[in-house]
Length: 351
Ligand code: GTQ
Image 1 (cartoon, rainbow, N blue to C red):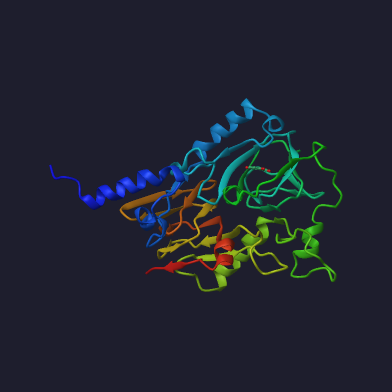
Image 2: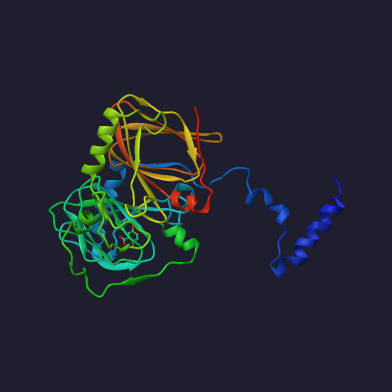
């Protein structure tokens, strides 16, 4: 056996001696700290709704919405189990509310989006205004606004919760409060926000009622779908995204929430897309149709066959491409507004 190199021994001695002072040498970790390209610890993953749904319904038997406060099964990234996140910055969960139930009023600094997956007629209330849910609707709970959910319909309602929980945890900026009333008092008629801000018009002396968040907190599916359908008929199809639109904060033209951007896209029948990658990892909810996403990261090649109500995650800088024989509609969200605010967003469209 060779004797240890004197320089190596000298270094090891240095590390041991300074360790009690909480000092550590950069040169041992520099490559990992400043990687040549993003090396996400997340992996791509798919949750088939037919496999998840039975557990949601069992959760419905096991605990009430009121007792759980929020009866949600978290979609955890398989490589980050125990951390309650689907990417390093984003949270995703499927929330169930049964007929007659109420999820009590609370507020928190985390922003939330709801994307309705199954069932109709439940509501979420934000700052005194209710939004009734239907599949494909995209609903926002702005940071620090009181919100409760309820189901006055006759079947279960399930939606995807997308929150910036891991981001706020990273910044140690999470605050929360429980409401005193079980559900908040309704003080504005349903649709008031949409009437004020949802028609490419705005009140003359408007403020921004929810700060950096969109004053529209419900974006109904019928409207989004109609736009995509018309574009599919009349406009060129993008070779990477099919027909893809981003949801807007009408007061700023930016994303509806300061931390999360949301998108809806339609892949036409027979679509075979080109590959792309981007720094913002994204979570997808399949609305209609079926398709395939191929995801490549280094040596790892994955193929997910998806259908309605399935969910999947494409992590940062993983190369993805879509195919759909019958055509499909996909909702997605990511932390892109944060990347853009920091000037670090990158996207590559490959051929
Ligand atoms: O509905 O307020 O999935 O506070 C996680 C945390 C939902 C909610 C979640 C929450 C909520």
